[in-house]
Every structure is written in C-alpha cells, then in structure tokens.
Image (cartoon, rainbow, N blue to C red; front, side, top):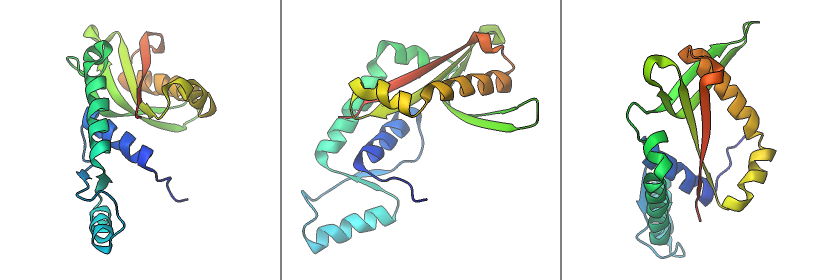
Length: 171
C-alpha cells in the first residue's frame, strides 16, 4: 500500500519534527511555480534527496504553527518542560503474550515515578472539524491503548497516566 502524500501531510511532518526534533528536511522553493523544465528538475532533485519542497508562504505558515505551539501556555509543561522526553518508544505485553508497541511524542514521568504524562502531537487543516476526524480515526482507542502501553512500559499504574492530544491547525 502506497503511503498517502499531500502538502498537508508534508507540513504536518515538518511541524512535528521542528517541535519534537528529528530529521525531516525541508527546503524553500526558489521558484514561484514549477512550469519550467528547470524548476521541475530542481523540485524533483530535492524530492529525490528526501527533502520536502515548500513555497515561501508555506515556510512562513510552518514557522507560525511551530511558534504557536511553542508559545502555548500548556506547551511549556507538556512538551518542553523539565524531564520531558520526545519520541519515546513504549512496549508492553498482554496477559496472553501479544506484544504491543507505541511511540509517545512526549513523555514525562512525575516526581517519585508516581505519575506519567503522555502527549500526542496532531496537526489538522481544520481545527473545528478535528473532533470528527478523531472520532472516525478512533483516537479514543489510541489514547486508551497508549495509556496502557505507557503505564506498563514505565511501571506506573494506568490510573495515574494523563494522556493529552496537542492539536495544531496547519492552515
């Protein structure tokens, strides 16, 4: 199955990487459009090298999204606070031996290892319709599973796990 590909996905990936760290490489297009052969060849070369090509306006928008996330009052506690870890692999095993895995975008273990906070960064083109997308994509089940996987992997009672979605509008 071929992975979906769109500018919205690209922008979401760039925002995710710029907030949490990682290697998503983007480059600002030096062309206003790709009608000329030279412009298309340049774009195709960038894409072949694994770079995401953004227009100047898209770069500005991406900067604004990242700044909005960084400046949100809850971000300091949930995404950038002391002892917050990013991109943490979590593992658990069910009682019948099924192995489970998840990746927390942000994870923080409370003082004394009594609490756990997990954060999933989501991007959406329309904030107001995110609740419908979340319902269709069963994000409630993701939150429940990640809560259990996180509690098992960190050996913290699931009742003391807080799970947050950080939802950023990309348009």
